[in-house]
Image (cartoon, rainbow over all chains, first blue to last red; front, side):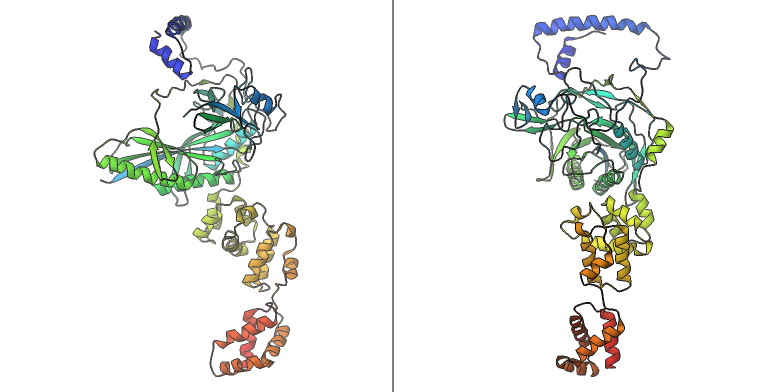
Length: 95
Length: 470
């Protein structure tokens, strides 16, 4: 699989990254390398193998529906954000 | 040209669990400060892991069974990636490939069946409020458990779209899985509308109206879309496939600026949540907890109550539960009291949270039947039963305290009638009646009622009067 310049630009837009031309080139090279490495796995025959989503083979891990005190207060959490206003997180206008 | 509309609806239902889907904080943020029901998990701080709420699984089973759906033993979660400030994680945890709820159907009051394609569990996003130059983010709603219910394109009119949404709301409130508070966005509807010429084998291009929060706006938006698309097709033009927004004030849908990027959510299995694999026994045990549904009540009361009355009452799950406890012979009387008296009251919604006991209501109907209470007095006592101070008290005692018990004792009544007949101001009326003027009997009955301070049984009084004046 060949990673094109447009693929990198597309992925950057989806992730809201702004990249310089030089970064697009170097990331493209890096990603091409990683994909090439992973592609070696395609040589294996997986036709009759059930896909594995996680390796611990756990199932039905769930908790009781009870409110628990949290390690951080609402104020502490809000203070971690860049800017706040009226108990809310202030962000550049989005639509 | 005549077109056949085809409508599919996606409905998001917020589940009324105590805590959120993936964190152990308060899930009911109604009336609370922004960002007060939040945890480090909701903020997606580094290293924070989701912990699945087991109650949401049980609620999903009930919701599924309410819609006659298969419950899938195996289900699991996926990440749906998108970049937006309402989601600190940068993805939504949903069930894209293996939903917990499979195929089923919802039966409308008209009998029409709308098939359900599937329904899945997912976390809600936060709430954004937009201002001139900035937006504010409230994370209280982040990861409130939702089930998203996807219908098949079985709906073909604005009315059926309305009825389907309303029936879903009833099913969810009757099943007890959602507060069903539409004002607070507990249920939200996305509606797909397309038109095809009559007889066509393929569906037309569809437009999607997103984020409707009332049955009425669903109905109006569908009506508007049918008219808008008909006009486009009549002019020989093509409907654009797009997402449209609804404005309740103008009654119009408008195209929303579509993203140039095609949707690319890069779904992947959620590695932090092991799959759900339910035993048949677990599903059976949870399904058995489903209370009576609207369809059950229609079967139960369809023969006794008028359909119009029953459909009004079916908007109130608690009321229907109570009605099922009422003595069969008094069901009509009590149902009528609820429709004619209570629902006309301004405070009806508040009253309905705390209903009188079945015994109090049965006693009331019995007293009315035995003519111990006039119909006016019955309504008065009925309303008193909702008074918190009357809680659990005997209906007869309450009626007595209010002085509303009718005088049915014939001896006592006769004495009162005699007193009235002896009064000079009734002499002319008596003479007129004897001369054949039938309607003055009303005046005489009224005089007796006044003398008895309203406690006499008017039909008994009339009978005595007629006997005495014959």
